[in-house]
Image (tube, rainbow, N blue to C red; front, side):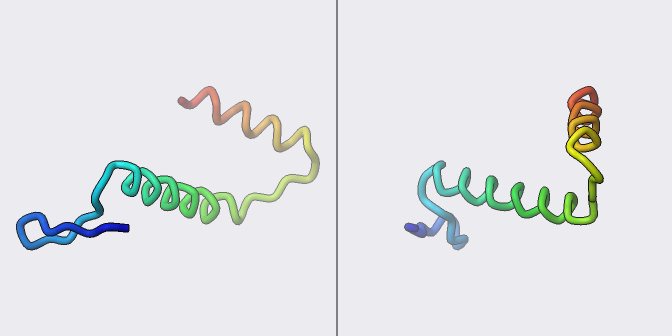
Length: 56
């Protein structure tokens, strides 16, 4: 990772690095939100995923 100074603030150089950071954060948040969810069977999981798809 290359850091460059931009007005006294160190920033990552290149869009790819920022995308990796954003994907990592999103993954972490998803795991935290889903950690308390438990499904008794595969059909329950599919039903919940289907319901989430209608919210978007």
